[in-house]
Amino acid sequence: MGTRARGGRPPSIVDVAAAAGVSHQTVSRVLNGSDKVSPETRERVRRAIDDLGYRRNSMARALVTRKSGVIGILTTTSLHYGPTSMLLAVELAARRAGYFTGVAPIEESSPEAMRAAVDYFLGLSVEGLVILAPLLDMAEDLAFVDFPVPVVAVTSPVVAEAVGVLSVSVDQAAGAMMAVRHLIGLGHTDIAHVPGPAGWYEAQTREASWRATMEEAGLAVREPLAHGWDAETGYEVGLALARDGAPTAVFCANDDLSLGLIHALHDSGLSVPGDVSVVGFDDVPQARFYLPRLTTVSQDFLELGRRVVSMLLGAMEGREPAGPVALRPELVVRASTTMPRR
Image (cartoon, rainbow, N blue to C red):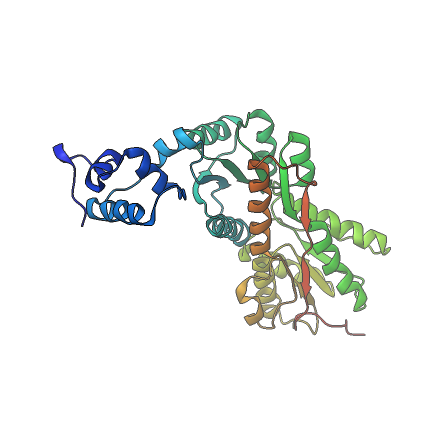
């Protein structure tokens, strides 16, 4: 265990220098990985660091080098699969790039809340910011904040461009189009949709793409009965559809909605996919264990995190990005979809 310096204070770089018999500049060179120190001196300094239990003051280092090794992440308080997966993916990618992260969830979106979170991170000397903004209100708040450090947002590319920040996203419109075209390709012409909440850009984009793909195919559009992300909403919609005349297929805005919908159809005496085919979105880990196994749209959150951090590091180094990045999702076909009964 390390010892404390005189007066009970934590050991400083000066204490390390005295213990190693070198100057504090030499200790600093060792800490910064300089090759201008002999192997013998480097070993003596490291031994003194271990003996004293010296811990580097990252704030003081930031004042000198202007590099804290910290990236700030602003996000929502949502516990849904998409936002939490994005957060974890960005944290992992940042750590693999040699950076630590600080996270500030914003409970109620407003320009004031956004500015307060940014000010908090600036007090920590963060080198860059990642903003996970699936809510349109949160994304639009970015226009009211001055960012003195590079920023990359995971949000609507249109909104990100309008407010002047870099963006990485998954092509939600393409994912929804894949799902609906898959059902049309199987022969379905009556395809309902259970959308996510209206204030989420992913939900709006998936619903708009469902409508556009149906209209492009010359098919009638059933107006959605409810909006939400949870299985309870899917269950309620499933009961209503079964009661009022079920379609032959349903595209749900996420997998939780699909789970509730399938349960309701089963409780109503309808089979999936025999009577109704169902497609979800997200490909949650348990989707392949649904009964039946769920056809869904997969988003590569790990790749999303890598691209976010890569773009942010490039901006921190002064490189000009090629433009917004939109990753293409993948349709994963399983047992919950088949041709409609003739």
